[in-house]
Length: 124
Image (cartoon, rainbow, N blue to C red; front, side, top):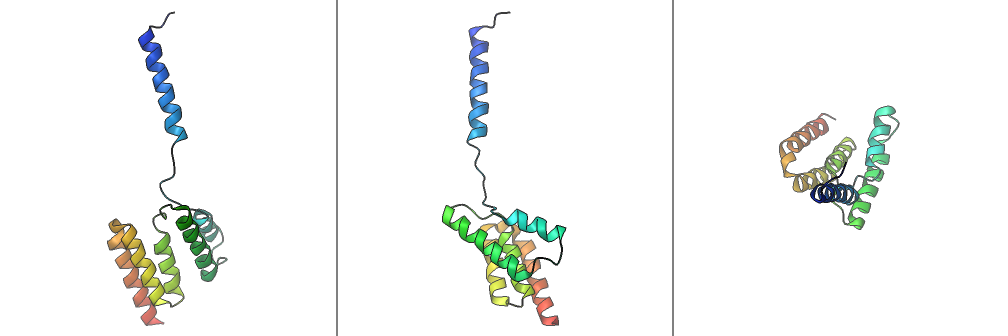
């Protein structure tokens, strides 16, 4: 069976596009060790103290900045929640505001988190 030149050319171009498309796929966001942190927190609830999580998240944020990559969605929100748990309302608000700044589509969700954090703080 002989393939026409056009068919061979088309298959070659498709193959090249497939290979180069997969090879140049870069991650849109920097996650660092954040996914592992979340996994560990769900597998062993209560084992990851809030301060330990804060330190690990701050390491992810520093690395993201040093690499010039965009921080993944939700990381600042998680940090804000952890600061709220510790009663650090100023730092909590700063982290929540950073999440809103980076991801404006999360405004309603983050506003809800901030309100719950403030109510929780008033009850303690």
